[in-house]
Length: 141
View (tube, rainbow, N blue to C red):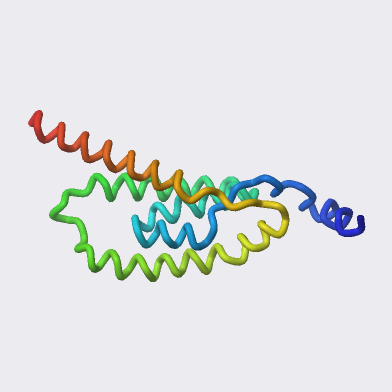
C-alpha cells in the first residue's frame, strides 16, 4: 500500500502499465542490421511511450527523414557496405547503452516488451515499395 501511494505521489502510478517498449537489444539489432535511422525511429517510439512525447516525435521524424534521404540517394553516392556495417556497430552499441537504463526502469513500472517483428515487416515493405517505384520510374524514363 505504501509503495502504491509513493508511486502515485511521484506521478508514476500507472502511466507505464501496458505500454509497449522496444528492448535495447531490439533497437541495437535493428540499427546494426538495417540502418541508424531505423534505430532512431524505434528509440523515438520508446521515448514517446515513456511520456516524452515531443522528444520522441522529433526522434521519429528525424529518423524517417534520414531514412527517406538514404533511400533516395543514388547508388554511386552510397557508402560501401563494410563502412556502414562497421560504423553501425558503434552506433548500435551507443543506442543500446542509451536505452538500457530507461527501459529497465520502465519495465519495473509496468511497461512490457514490444514484439520485435512488426518493424521488420514495415521496413521490408517500405524497402520493396521504394525499389519497385524506382524501378518503375527507370522503366518509364
